[in-house]
Amino acid sequence: MNKNLHSIGLMSGTSMDGVDASIIKSDGEQFIEIIENIYLKYDNQLKLELKKVVDSCKTKEDFNKYSKNIKEIEKKITMKHAEACKKIMEKKQGLKIDVIGFHGQTILHKPHKGYSIQIGDSNLLLNLTKVSIVSDFRNNDILNGGQGAPLTPLYHKLISLKIKSKFPIAFINIGGITNITYLENKNKIESFDSGPGNFLIDTWVKSRSKLDYDDKGKLAQLGTINENILKDFLSKPYYKEKFPKSLDVKEFNLNNIKKLTLEDGCSTLSMLTVKSICMAINSFKKKPGTIIFSGGGRKNKFIINSIKKILNKSVSLIDEFNFDGDFIESQAFAYLAIRSYLNKFITLPSTTGVKKPCKGGKILKFKGQ
Image 1 (tube, rainbow, N blue to C red):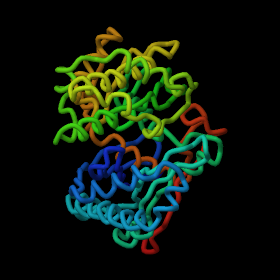
Image 2: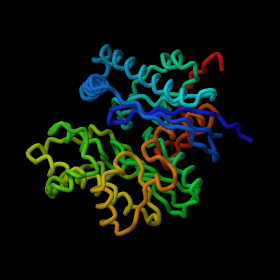
Image 3: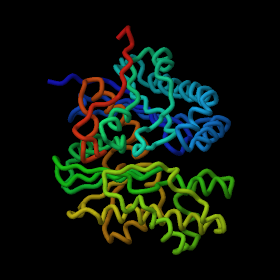
Image 4: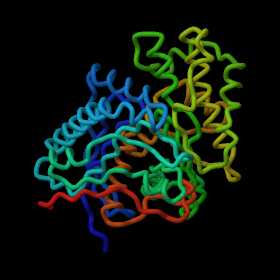
């Protein structure tokens, strides 16, 4: 019988606005109990500094060039992650945490060039929390021929068993990038990034207004889709690649929509997310009977209603199954941390393209544990 461990999962995504933290109890297999979730927001200064670093790094050479600045920001975000751990542990005083899954902040994701870079100081987090840390989840997968992403499929599979849903089923997480996990049955699982999620929309809104994002898709609803620009986006080579595949948001930019109004830009970019998802769903031979959305983009009514209309079928939000859709990824990294800690694989050939089921994560054990 597998031992149940308590794990904290930490996630800072492409929105770069804060840290999601979750505590779960799991055996790394089929048992899962969600204990607590919290969100810790970054202050505006930290967000600006982090964005500047991420925007300045287009290549590994850039990353090395700006290493001094990156080290400074790495320390700051690690301190924030430690603060998130402190706050969530204070909510559950007396609970012994066995391991922390520390994803870090992605700076570059270039699996075709053999690397994916996340910043975050695991040694500092270890010293601040006094809990064993699992980090660097992607590297071993890439070294073994995989994309290093998406990493959430095994957790999505666990959720599918927990909610006892009928197969085929698709989990769609609309974060900065949209990733899809498709389960034809409990043994056949496929996963890939379908395309941009919120990242381009958020970047556009921030560049043209004082807002951080398009709340519930209200701006997109007011705009008109520019079909030529949308067609141009959808003609990108990424959409012709076979999956498993993963996306760096830097492969897309806003250069060709600069002349659009705020609302028209939101409509066009939101429809890019919609069409990317629908193309992905339609690529499966057996269409999923159940489609479940998580991530911040699930709150965008323009996106969700447009997908329903194009696919002509009902969809669900993961919240309807008693899972908080804002914290699926932080929970996933808590789960993957347990799997790594127990020496279990975390990626599969059908989810990342890795040669064989692959273990991953670098473990730093706290000596007192």
